[in-house]
Image 1 (cartoon, chains in turn purple, blue):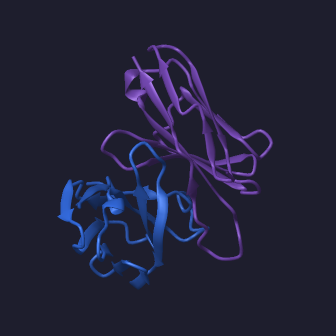
Image 2: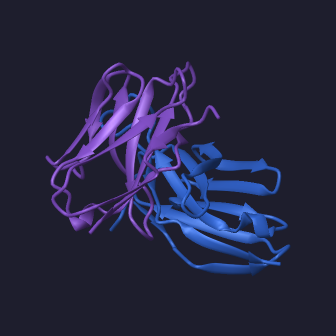
Length: 116
Length: 116
């Protein structure tokens, strides 16, 4: 399967713990995005990378959240001191910059986080 | 008011019916309009995208964009039980148009059930 993969698929943690998620984009895709989706809502943009550079961060990305893409391939999203409000599906997407303006974002299956 | 409004439903139709889904938006900078399908506990997958105003057809699916009314629609003809999913509209600005030009802004999603 050459799609976007995310690990783990499910994570249950206690309030106050730190968690880290991993995303492996489609090979050679230079752009990588993180979104968060809560129950009954559409995905909301968190941040995006072009290669290893983090170019944009949403106001939703509080100081407890940090994302990295150290070698321009896989990315990690860490949440420190988790709160119950962090419970959501965390989606990763990737796209390839081409000469055309529109480049599809391909989504992974998501990591479902439950904070008890 | 959210930038993108979408009736969450649920919407239940008999097999073979024509389904009409729609979204309204407030940001006139949006130029790309997408429809994603999301099955339960999966990531969204792109169905269709349209640039600016107009219609686009792909098999049983037709997307319409009316920028003057800030209104987009997705029509599904001859609906099948396999079409049962949540349909998300999403929008984006043109690239290189400043902060936020690569992020997708989603509606809440409409949950569709097609009954055999």
